[in-house]
Image (cartoon, rainbow, N blue to C red; front, side):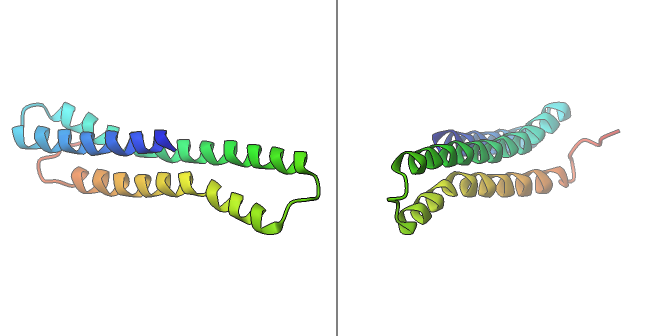
Length: 114
């Protein structure tokens, strides 16, 4: 989960860097790379969230296997609910970084792909 938070911070700083590069109007290639990095880090944050969920599910199933049949369904439901926290934050990061990427890509002075 802390890696997903780290990705949030990185996207925030990349967005600030993009704004600074956009206002300076010096190098359009740096502008394009900074914008692409925002989307990449957002996607990576989502994948890290999914990986965290997989690790959490494996450890939860391990604990259920060790406990045998003495597990209450409420405990299982609570554990499954906790495993969805990291992917939820990762998905929010992906959505926000995709919106930032799309909006900044469609700015007037953004370099063309040609």
